[in-house]
Length: 224
View (tube, rainbow, N blue to C red):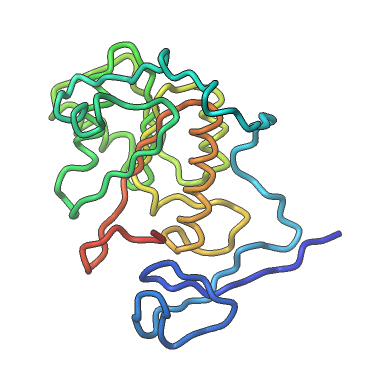
């Protein structure tokens, strides 16, 4: 049976969803921020990360975390902020003002890795731009892969080929998934793309870094 087109209204300030248009958002109290977005297209197969793994409940007293090792970076301050290193399967959101150095920081981290395979995904810059910034950092690496892509369907195909230990996404606002008919950066796109990446991180144990843009109010753009 063909799927029906489904749409909803999203507050572009805080991400609140409503089945109808509202003049004032009941959550953030902003006016005229609701925009209609199509969340399911007709006859469109659902894409994204697919896994056959089924999680089952575990008794808390039987859960063993003693062998869980954090991934330590060469940046001691980054390790300190992350509580001693990167937890495998974790999702880390990095936000900051434009031009503050988010991309440079994570590229430097990716290039400094000596024994972990890192896939750096950029939806904003070309491979040549990233290479030029890498040369300014004066670092090179045999474990850092660069992918310039915005489609999550294509990204997960490349992830299957590379099998990275750590994934860097620059930025989450540039990604889009094919089964949602709205532009990259919209609330529904950010929400769905992030959900796909969280599912991927938890089921594969791959740590994921997300770079998030800052809006005019100084908060990270998109749904909280």
